[in-house]
Image (tube, rainbow, N blue to C red; front, side, top):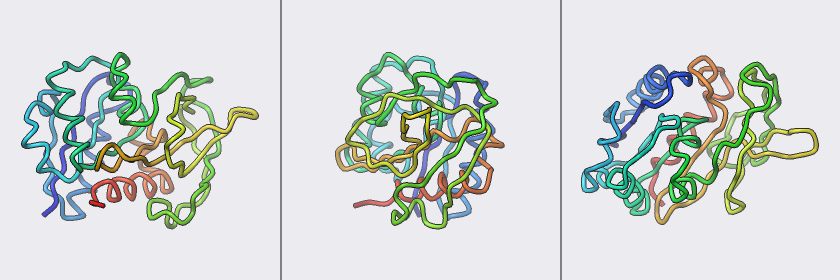
Length: 209
């Protein structure tokens, strides 16, 4: 049986508990043994982390101690997958550049707030994560981000003439990394195309190369 750890908390505006519950329900439906924690101390035990298949952070802003971050980075480097959405993964610990490097990006701004209707275009239709996912529109926060040019981009959006990655994969050591900037709150995650993209992304991240 595969094992997953979901760690939720931080700023409440992104509904971390509700989003974590969605991910927990989905992963259990796929046969995962799922632990949900509301403390970053869940990252302290590096040995335990390395027995997992997937880590799902859902923690916006806040700070993380070095003794919490180091085992997380080491676990993913060893081959544990990590996947998540929106500010819960890519606006988590603003002072931790090594964490941002692992994720592959960091939130910068969301012009227009939470009521922007924008288009998401799938740019890699052959990837397992995007199977059956069509281009879609959503009304939410449209993330303008700093992104790692080494990311494998799955989907994009536009800010005028600027093409901005929305979802990507990358590697951190032996670990698979998946991210989607779509996923502002629970109802956004549950929209059909975002839900399909995100859940397929989590399953992909949990696989070993």
